[in-house]
Amino acid sequence: MQRCCSKKGELRYYEYPAPAKKRNTSLKYQQLSQEERYIIIALLKTHLSMAEIGRQIGRSTSTISRELSRNRRPTGYYAALVAHEYAMARRKRSRRGSQFTAEQWQIILFLLRLDFSPEQISNTLKRFALFSISYETIYQYLLYDKKKGGTLYKHLRFVPKRRRKRYNSHDSRGRLDGKRYISDRPAYINNRSEIGHWEGDTVIGCDRRHCIVTLVERKTGFVIIKKITARTAEQVTAACIQAIKEHRRKFKTITFDNGTEFHSYKEIEAKTSVKCYFAAPYHSWERGTNESTNGLIRQYIPKRSCMKEITQDDCDRIAYRLNIRPRKRHCYKTPEELYYGKDSALHLLLEARHNN
Image 1 (tube, one colour):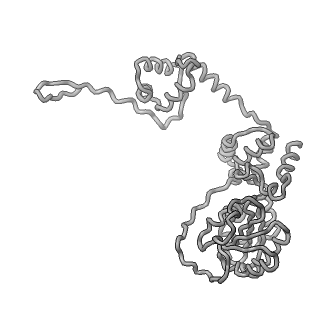
Image 2 (cartoon, helix red, strand yellow; image 1 turned 60 degrees about the vertical axis):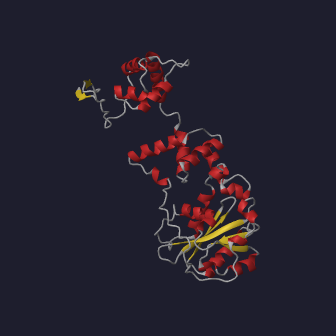
Image 3 (cartoon, one colour; image 1 turned 45 degrees about the vertical axis):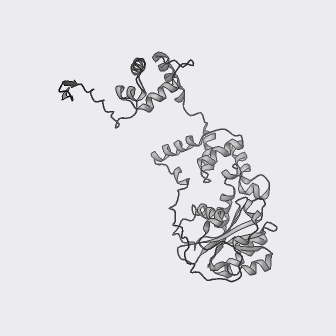
């Protein structure tokens, strides 16, 4: 109680309420008890706010709000005994144990070892009508496995550090006269309405010599990877021509990066009748599909790793993994089935696994 003086000289006494009990946030969260629910209903009758009720019993406002929204009667009336019965029944249902069999978990782990994300696993199982599981459940399983010392979490992708975009930077690479820029490319190609329009780039190793050539089809996301021993125009051109001949009638245009390794593009056009275009210097987003796919490849060939020991068979295996991985933008269909227009290898693998 504190004494103060009013303007008229009268003495008045003000009594301040006792400070609210500070919640101990270091303790683990505990469920509301039946006694606390009786206190809540008593405080509700005094028309206190949820924040004030929370302070009175040492609980957060969100706890009070959640309690009142979950455990009211269908009529909207909150009764302590009924609310406690609702909460105990919900708690009992949540402790029934895993509803998935060992065989179902084997299928989940099989897809995880193919480097599918939990969201891709969940939607793939739903798409093929095998069974339903939320991706949150899979993440919880991975967290539990990691705490036990498991390594399943290593199959998840990690978001790399974003690189600074170099706007209006000077292009120090060799200039090439007469090449077509992406601004000259027909506008309908931007709609991804047909198969046959590709994006191309190279991914180099730490020795600055051995590298791979990546070609990605814009509509389906289908990827082709070719290993070369030197990032020269001669080897890159030969790799592109070989890929085009292996996939006849599937190439109409290729949009390349501005690297000097693509300066022999006229040889590609002369030998294959495929038109070549180039993105503007330092505008990598104009070849977004290719750049995104290169990021997926880095899951298997991390940056600062040497590509000297990587073989063409390794490249084919990486491309296969990516081509059977479902994509969200295609309603979880795979690039392989969209590219070839038939059931993907993933469907056959899942059927064999499920039947076994």
